[in-house]
Image (cartoon, rainbow, N blue to C red; front, side):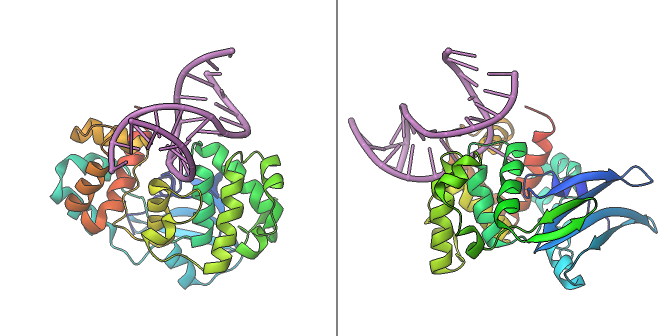
Length: 272
DNA sequence: CGGCAGGCGGTTA
DNA sequence: TAACCGCCTGCC
């Protein structure tokens, strides 16, 4: 399989619990993370002129991990389709060509993207790790460190606003407590309107949850970076979020989420 | 010290 | 329904 690269996949802003923790003999990065309540190590190993994803996991069957890494999707076809619709995206689709949109847990996405608002990635990761260590189940030691699952809603429901405030989550503490309670009471949200009804969830966060938690690949989250990009590449006024959404819907359709990830990853490395 | 960051929610007009 | 502003915190 050629359309997979761990740096592209884990550094494009979609997940917060995978980190490069070593290097393979050939110099390629080795990532360690937790997904679905299992700790895992991931690396890419060259094989017959292509690349194999090799996992060392503490649990989860082959089906789970294939689904998690979206291995059943033909990304070459997606990139071809996007470039055909708009050749301005071709450089970005090539640059981040190994991105895979992970199939992640809905509740984890809900809380993680609430934490992400007005925040940067290193700090988001620290906050989420602190939540996992305090409220999540221990998975025992893996690769030299104790690992923790992201807490289930019933586990996180034990958290108080004060505890979360003490963990430096800031004004988001109220949203986490309220959204966890809502999730417990109503079950997982299934569409944009339901996601948007969660406290602390606005349009940007809701689109992230749609894309990463429900794999709704037509979702197109517009954050400040995407505003910069849409202004720079397509001339949109930075305040015209509705225009950007409409453009993405009409131009990229069911592949808008992939387009957003390629553009985001491409521009982020260029530090506009 | 002030300004800002990968937004949201409440208040205005 | 658009525009504005306060907000926790960390970093510059």
